[in-house]
Image (cartoon, rainbow, N blue to C red; front, side, top):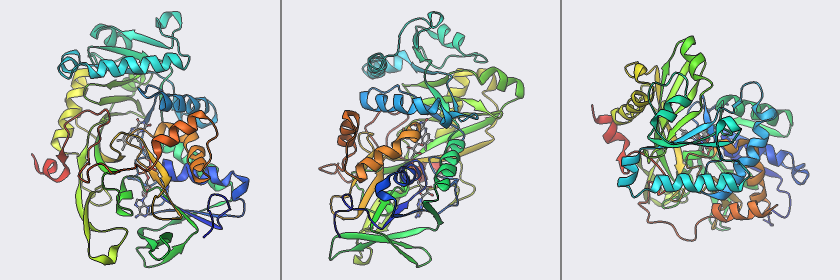
Length: 455
Ligand SMILES: Cc1cc2nc3c(=O)[nH]c(=O)nc-3n(C[C@H](O)[C@H](O)[C@H](O)COP(=O)(O)OP(=O)(O)OC[C@H]3O[C@@H](n4cnc5c(N)ncnc54)[C@H](O)[C@@H]3O)c2cc1C
């Protein structure tokens, strides 16, 4: 096989139709170099996959990062969210409050306040103004609980003790924007969508190359280049121990009245940096409470994915969703955490039952940087995953950046810096490294089956 990136492969197989896979398919379809290439997107679910991380009522779009480069990439994405990408209700720029619980933060050595300062410094560096809302500033400080309550219509409680609001952040209707991208991708006439479940990649050990994938139905699909973008399921297909791991995150939804919707819908998203809890403004009379947490690990012993016939087994954390068990709900621990945050922010709704709950799976990396790179051992394989709970917001721009990795190009300094972060790590973290070291709330070390068993 020649150099895939220098020549045009005759076929590319993209596994996974989430943010990473679908955006890459679209970006490649736009490049003249790939005009003769057959591009296939394969997913085990028909689009939109109901348990994919990319499919949900809402996702936060924020340039509020303590890392400058993700902030800068979000500013690029937001330019597009403000145009066609965000039209027809797909993007709402209501603002985002980042709050802290002062006592909790002081106990933890003031880490969250420091993170806030770094976020604000990056926003300033990217040209956002800091000052009073009434003077037209982009970002305003919320110095106490009263300021937190005042800022949100329909809130009779505060999301935290102090913080700031970035009025230029917002949220996207996640499923609607994915459908928008799907429509654009189909309209190119360049991408074939196939609905089938991958069982393994086709490894050719003699040439150290991946040649395609075998499906659950026994069929094999061959391709010159495979782009593995199976989200939190990716550790099923290559050995990602100490590189990326699935963590289950809690989402709880409650029904609200039309009147409550009218009060809450123009509010900023409320995110508490101390415990990772957040409430996104409601959509269609449904309010969502969730946690950006360390999450639950779900350990499974599986045949070594790169050598399934060897008899060797490895243990990895993999998703467990309503597709595996239609009755699956969030554990009591997660439900209690969501309820407590709801009671803190909107006490009069605290007793209302959840209409729906869901465990949604992050592909977590030790530092929270994505993993977008050629595999160091297997030729013909690019891995694009490791969203670590923060990739959705980049939907309008992420595909182009992944396509740059595929062709081994850096279009600018930002791309250069990001590609450094997304590189396959030189060393794996210890193989039992499952929970990220990135900023998260909740407890570290929770196991899904143990938490589900607690009443
Ligand atoms: C609860 C939650 C909240 C989040 N909040 C935010 C937020 O506010 N802002 C933000 O920017 N980001 C957020 N994220 C992160 C963001 O949604 C993810 O980083 C992103 O969607 C990951 O996309 P993906 O393509 O890697 O994975 P997915 O969207 O999960 O796609 C993977 C695809 O692979 C398919 N697949 C799996 N196994 C197979 C198989 N065997 N064969 C074929 N196909 C298969 C699946 O069906 C799925 O469609 C959140 C994520 C979660 C879970």
